[in-house]
Length: 91
Image (cartoon, rainbow, N blue to C red; front, top):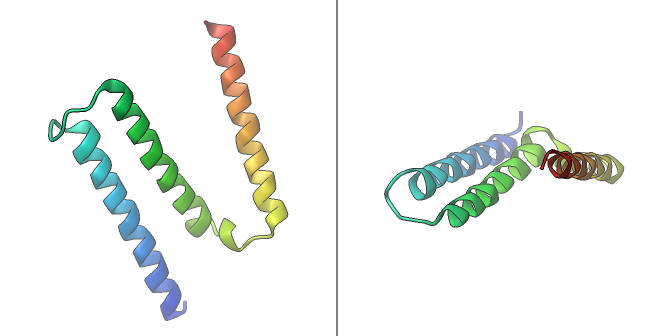
């Protein structure tokens, strides 16, 4: 493994660690008081950033063909659509 890739993966790992720590400090401890909606929104934003970093770098999607990236995006969009439909049918 090249030295640059070790530095890159180490930086991504540190970014994920910082995001997880930030998520805990801000939204799950009594360090700062947030409303429920703010805590949920903040947690979702941090989770989205962490997911994108993991998918892009650790699952190597960043270096794949764009068609595969679009296919994965379409699968995610269809999954979200099915979840929305299931939520609507339950309530």
